[in-house]
Amino acid sequence: MRSVCVFCGSSPGDDPRYVEAAAVLGAEIARRGMRLVYGGASVGLMGTLADAALAQGGEVLGIIPEHLVAAEIAHEGITELRTTTSMHERKAVMAEVADGFVALPGGFGTVEEVIEIITWNQLGLIAKPVGLVDTLGYYDRLVSFFGHCVSQGFVRAPHLGLYTVDSDPVSLLDAMDHWVPSTTPKWQDRS
Image (cartoon, rainbow, N blue to C red; front, side, top):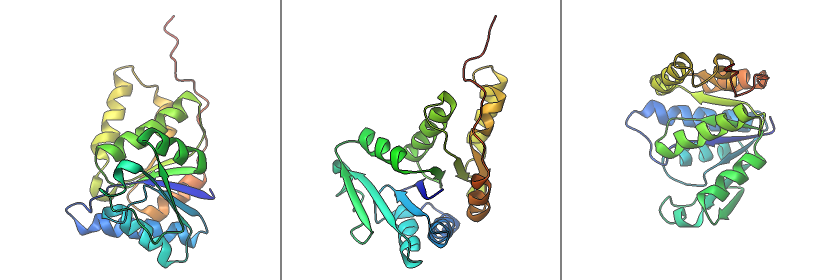
């Protein structure tokens, strides 16, 4: 991976360990010589992530839709800030420029973004590693829900390998380096 897109909250969360995980991830991406791609904000986990990468001399590309520039306080100190006309365009640009994707804790937007990328992998539209930073078990219930989807016949079991989960951002990046795309088609034969 030369370029990693990170989805995360524009809020810091209620526990300082969320902020710590964002700082560790941003610094590690830069230490590995990878470009950080993220949502372009200077606040919350987004700001911490970008600032940590910049502090290590990393390249940071922020992609933010016009309607969020003021609301999320666009980060003016990053390497490059691209403004898009919509959320859809933002996600399309992120998907195009990133070689892998990581989700730190975040809200509806973070979860929606990472699930969309997992779905694109499932459909064979892309073949890029996806990781969930499971700080304080943040993604435990989501991962459990994915298991429930399998048990109810809506997701094929091999597709649980479309993403990697680890509480340690450094170990997660290591695992993502060894990720192998699924060759199992999405559609189940019901004959």
